Image 1: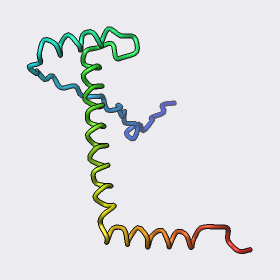
Image 2: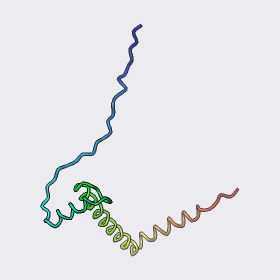
Image 3: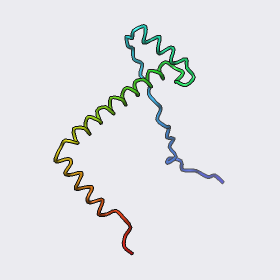
Image 4: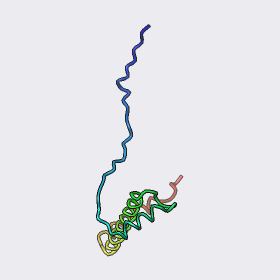
Length: 101
């Protein structure tokens, strides 16, 4: 008996791999030394690339958080925005609580 198996639907899907891009930057000797020192610590990434990526992520989040705080600060003085927030708040307040049985 000869059995054929239709396997055309059994495609192999490889998980996407992280793409690395080689870049060159002109850093001060002090910055290079600090990256080397930090990459030698046990509580930080062991590669210099990992240290640089961690520092960039930290800076990115710090700037994003500062920008968000600035937006919220400006929104606090925006009368139409505050009116909309009050309206939404009243709608949710009316919907809160247990339904009547």
